[in-house]
Length: 287
Image (cartoon, rainbow, N blue to C red; front, side, top):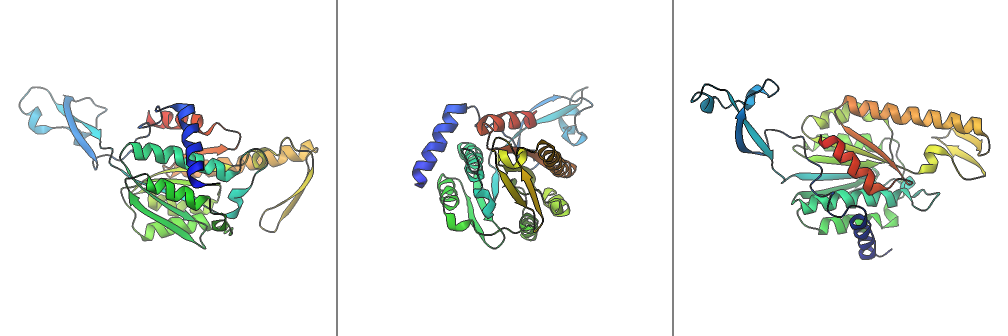
């Protein structure tokens, strides 16, 4: 599809679903780096000690703490998985379609908020980096790369672990990082924890509804999981339930690992209203 046409469709879907309500919704959790002093308030025990303004307090019989406001000028890095399975589809949309909707929604919000946007597309055999800029061209360029079918050719099981190691070697700091991937590799545990020390991380899993549920298609299939095959007839309910249980366990383990490492997590599939799901997700973590 023509890139301009694709962006117009994404923009129309976003505007139709949410209007401008999504913009400015997400906020960084960074404190004491990019924040501006707003006013004083009387200190309460729930306030951090370092917020106390001792100079102002010395002039009164009360203790005052400073109220800060987050500065919106953030560096936002999108780390986007372009392994060949992203083009998988059973229903109306591919996983890549969902990935593009997720990226466009958040990137458009970043652009409206005046943030600097960069993207790194990876399958590990290739890495495509689009440097930080504050204008819409980075969104256009990223959608253009995602629409280039030649970029989706490799499937490396350790691709996400490798890209996180790479970001750690680059000493990435003070960045809001969005991972958008269908990867559930628990091996990223230690590396993502190192990356979190100097950054805020949000991990968004993209799935096809079918690969989570094996539903609504009456045929036999063979699933390949790194040279191990599982043959399933899709009218065999016992095997389907077994598969769904195993799949849910994998997703929950991955979620628990990320939460343990202070990473926000959300999984989305091709049956979701992506704009609504993201709106609810960011509304929740903003609280």
